Amino acid sequence: MASSRGAGSQQAIRMADLEKMSLDQLKAVKEQADIEVNLLQDSLNNIRTATGRLENASAALHDLSLRPQGKNMLVPLTASLYVPGALDDADKVLVDIGTGYFVEKTMAEGKDYCERKINLLKSNFEQLIEVASNKKTLADEAGVVLQAKMKQLSPSS
Image (cartoon, rainbow, N blue to C red):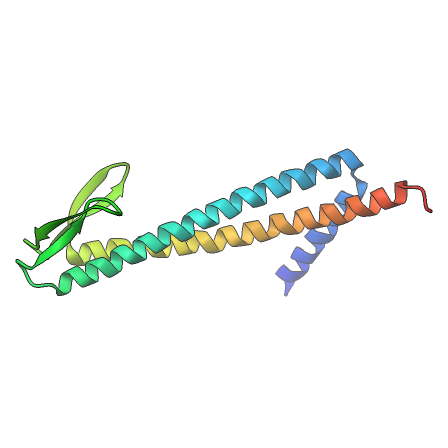
């Protein structure tokens, strides 16, 4: 309960600080917050894409573990290029750990790696959503104060 009161008082302080700012300062705060929100949205999209890729990789590992040794299959070299191949050893996989480096792991270690990365990305996603929400709130508050000040300065008709 004390933490929610602290968050409310922080927001009241923020609103009070915004009301003390000049028009130029308010415009700058709003523009900066909008830019940061857009960057955070891009980061959220990148995390969503990476999580999807890892989930696909985890599903592919599961599917691969069910296939018998020596089974003929198509091996993807790129998103649109496949070559024929045969499954030699279903218990060993190469895991892309980034920047062109691959590590040989067992099937279980590969699945575990994917799950740990998925959990990390989901955790980062949740934290970024919170930060983006706070920045969006700041931008909205600055916009409201800016509109109110501009309305006060404009001559009434």
